[in-house]
Length: 95
Image (cartoon, rainbow, N blue to C red; front, side, top):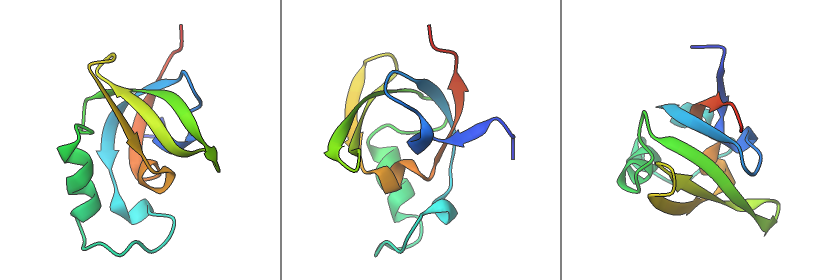
């Protein structure tokens, strides 16, 4: 695995990255889903390899959920922090 890959959950508001991998083995705790189900759900909302993601906002309680813009604002979605943990990104330089 590339040393530059970090979990999407580690990005701060305003930071961006490009999705390189979704790895359910990184889930921080048990989730009652069949293997592959969480990855499938993320793919269905547009979080796929190669998509550019920008962190827009954190929820008030434990910074959960996380609001994201995909493809430079084309789509806005919100995901739980534990879901963001399994999304590995190459962080992009902030302007």
